[in-house]
Image (cartoon, rainbow over the protein chains, first blue to last red):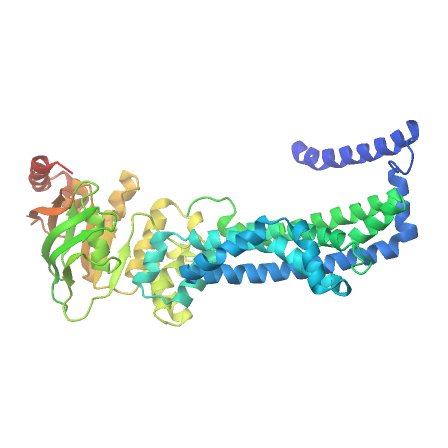
Length: 260
Length: 247
């Protein structure tokens, strides 16, 4: 009981202490606000520039979620295709790998030229999708391959067709893998979106990365911190929501990972 | 009723060159309980997979009377869908065959009752003990009333007590349903206790080295395990195994 209370209270106390120390040390060592602003100054930014920051956060979040949804859908669909046809897997998987191993930041300028700077939002969407796509594909493919061979035999024995085998056996077997990949993809979609916004480096994208660039150029360090804070909160929220979905779907039969 | 199941000069060599089975012929009478006995690596499981149609024989064939009989299979592992309740697992063969869900569930619950799991229809596999999971597996194999039940060392991973209890349950179900039982095991005593006939396999590739009848009448009670008749049959088998222990 005491341990449980400590496990909640201790991290909060530590966090509050660190913030307090930050505030105090900036004053004590007379650190310039364009090097390190105190937490109070960062909070104050939300009063002056709150509307524009939240608007940008909304933009970035929108592209991230759209790219994430696209990645989950397309990654799962391609993995299903791979599972049903080895030829398709052999022919297509190299391209998926190439797309994955080439750094997003290096592809970004090309994509931006292709879609045009006026459509920078589309470039951001495409790049965030590329970043998030591969973990979904890889985990779904691994999951679909991890089906218990005895169960597969059983389905064959009872003359299950591909559709029955896929829905009743392969999808549920691969769910733990797929959800782990999806959790990673959520964070990567955000990373991809921000990287693409930086590469576009244009007010056209109007996302949080643009606010950071803009504030950096004007040495508004507190505003940069405020934007960073929003990005971190978004990432954490995404991860928390996806973890919760994973728990909802798996905890009954997979929770303690005991063998069945 | 169905006639015999014939294994006609069955042989299986795997693509990697492993000769698992060479030239096995045997007639298995409808309704009989037959064990395939031998050390691991004698192609016992391969015989089951050939009968089940999960592998194609390299030579020879499995002859069914007229049409292929309906099959039930029990693997060494319970092989349950971890995400589905006991009833859902048992209903699988029925649902795959197109039976309506409510009807399938009703029959699945009936099958679970037969293996003393009446109260566990909605339990998930991980909530059941090893022996109970194996019972669910037995219920699933029998739910569609198969003509032939294939069992691949189903109780090898269970403790002595659970194993003995499940042997008795299996014989009771066999007496009730009248399926043909083909039981693969490497336990001499399990083979003797269960079977009317024991086919001993040996060698690599596996081949039939002895065909031993066990005339002890059914129902066999646990006391049979310590009887003179049991010992005599076990002795015969052990003698054969000693002669050919090359596997």
